[in-house]
Image (cartoon, rainbow, N blue to C red; front, side, top):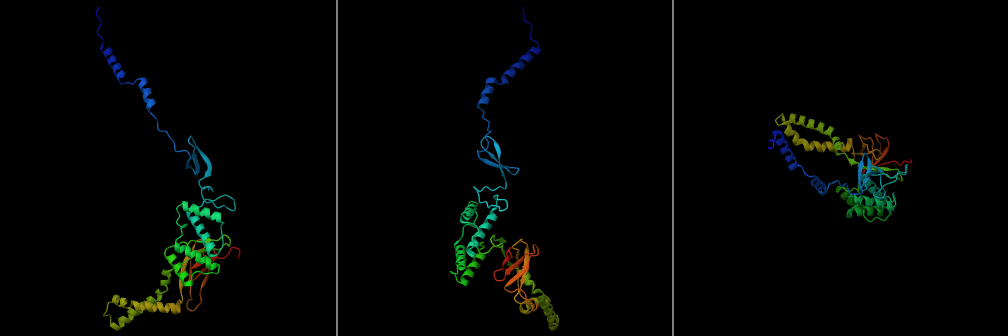
Length: 319
């Protein structure tokens, strides 16, 4: 008995099943591949700290959890943290604030003999700045000599003459040393006195000569026109007379109008607002001499400014 010939549908189904078998991996092969595949799901090293929503988060190797510290919290075991006298809590400072405290402590000890912090606290602050890469903790030879001279002068045993000390101070100022001069306002805790350094205002000082220079310039051009009859260019005539005009205007201004004048500007030691002060007389009216006493336009605090050093200081808080 002959078998019936397979239908076209039967042949197509058989071909499809053989293709699936040829291209489908076996269960054993799939398990082998999964067994040899290792997913890279390792987390950060244990002890890693992150900040999430201003909260400190630490990874212990298995999980993340909050340490309970805020972003601005200071850890005394890891950095220098002054104590807030009002709350008794440690305060986190910026590197700039720590540098200012370090310089204030140095200058208070060597210049006036006052110790604003104990040795252990000062050493901790110095070590913190050194770890942060601050350059103020490394004093050069001139800065060390300057502080030693200030300390010896305070004890009444000067090691440098006035001329030598002034020359050393001027060298440090030209080099931009923060030991010899500090332009930022600073306050001493024990006395409540705040200090800052003013600078000469050369622009406004030169403006004092402008009225006479203008008058002399117009007179010179008018006189030249009358004498020469316009035979020379006014621009050339003005350039030729410029040395005489400036010399005459400066001499008369410094002698009769604004004698012994000096204009300085700088931050208020208490609030930091910019202030200006004029030393000298005005048309015979006596003004500030060696020391000027002005009132800050912002905080209304009285500021005493020394003419020679341009050092500005506030009054003691207990006055």
